Image (tube, rainbow, N blue to C red; front, side, top):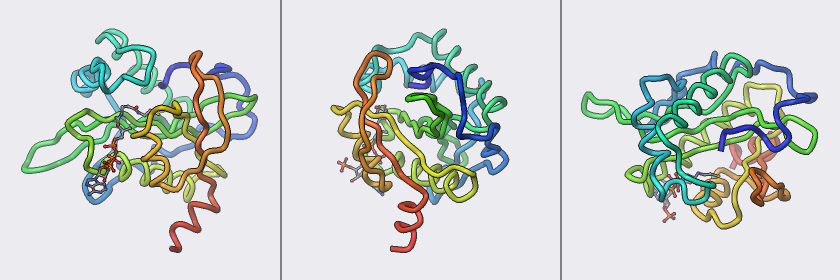
Length: 200
Ligand SMILES: CC(C)(COP(=O)(O)OP(=O)(O)OC[C@H]1O[C@@H](n2cnc3c(N)ncnc32)[C@H](O)[C@@H]1OP(=O)(O)O)[C@@H](O)C(=O)NCCC(=O)NCCS
């Protein structure tokens, strides 16, 4: 989850911050629009983070007050890091639906800063390829436009749907770490692998 990293946000030796990814927004895909989260997204975001099925691989669901704190921390990260989780929206028939969040945040573990892909989608949005479409757009944007060599994701080994997203965007498993007291696999996509996939 986007709380504090296992080692906190201490040394960020390998990354020049802020990353300025947010100057490249909004990010559009064939079916989705990704924008910075703001307080107008609190209601649907809090409903999603209070859903026990959405949160089954996290330590627990969040109250509305915790979701608001989470949202404010995310907004603050845009300013400090120039990147963070984004709102995933779908514009259809003159209305806009909130489908979830997806994006890249700076996370420090094993003594260095990493650019971590994260995503949560409302249950109604599962099973349509939206998470893969949003995640693919985020990692491609970062690896093409930023001075970063790789993007990682921290995924519980039992979170099969999330592993599916990681695999579909070309990530491969690169080890494991303890995060929030739970074992997480580290999934990784390097710039070279991303470029090779684009050529296929
Ligand atoms: C992780 C999560 C986003 C994955 O959602 P998802 O719906 O499985 O993933 P996608 O949106 O990429 O959809 C893929 C599915 O849609 C299907 N699909 C249907 N239409 C599709 C289309 N047009 N394009 C691509 N896939 C499509 C795929 O076949 C696949 O189904 P399958 O898993 O049965 O093979 C979701 O389970 C979730 O929000 N979980 C809770 C939060 C969480 O655990 N986050 C990750 C923390 S590490």
